[in-house]
Length: 279
Image 1 (cartoon, rainbow, N blue to C red):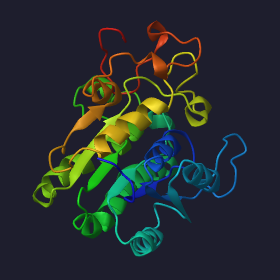
Image 2: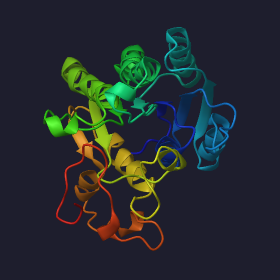
Image 3: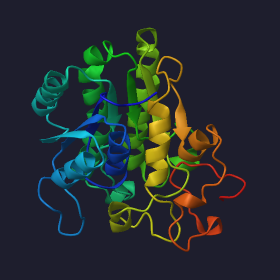
Image 4: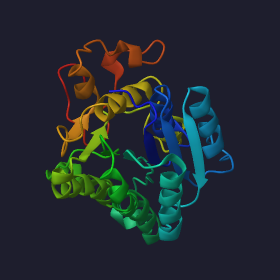
């Protein structure tokens, strides 16, 4: 099922995994609207909403960069209205924007706690909520959040409670909306990487490096597979990138290794369970 002419709204997307997904979808000829606040280059992180928009256009899509904060209700509401008016509707929502701080509770400021929860959980809820009326009119609507499978084991919660709450908040949006919107035929799912994914941002926060991580392309390819399935048949799932690709017959994931990388060196991402080859 091609994404040609379909309209995607993505929070964030100025760099990293979000940009990779946007460019992948653009290769089908999709319209991609980015809601992000990175209008000026970060001193240590490359990429802005405008460089991402250029990459989308070069890939064959139509880009609509909308500069603003996903925490701002008025901005998000006006952006959604603008996208729907510009392209005649909305078919896909991708909740990609995310803030991270892996500090332990005693060391985490409430300012950072609020930042993570307002961007991750609240931002996901807000953007999804405002797009629902438009998604109901789509022939194959989807909401896809980049958030982990829900876990209740204490070992997944005891290291960085604040960040875990914010990311699991995104996943709870998936769980709730999948059931709430089931009769509307809207596919609501989450996607998470098995291993760390190397980007400038993950290196910046110390979560990944280019020898123990896969490239952003594995998440882009997995997202494409999900969004080209009938939403009414695929919903309420917490999907892992490697499992999504395995479902299409892909068994060799070496293409997603960095140059000189080995499966044996790969590092599990947060909340990801080991497989036979990755522990």
